[in-house]
Image (cartoon, rainbow, N blue to C red; front, side, top):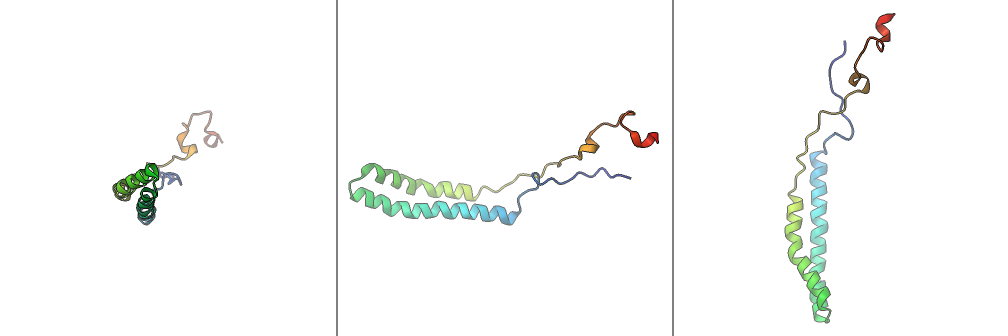
Length: 103
């Protein structure tokens, strides 16, 4: 007797909480590392007369923390779908296709 159980597909499996948290922490670390580097580089660029580069780096150093916090707080709330259905179970059984009962 078959049960009508749905199969768990690899693409429908949700990301584990630990992996999701590690990905968000890594993204935050990269963004804040860039910010820490951008701030002194902007001061150096402004002091050396490269006004455009200095302003771009200063703006990055100002706005990156808010973007980094928003991405770090973006928890993956996706739910696993119902999953794939077995291809043989998805096909309708018609009398011409039901070879097992004819024998």
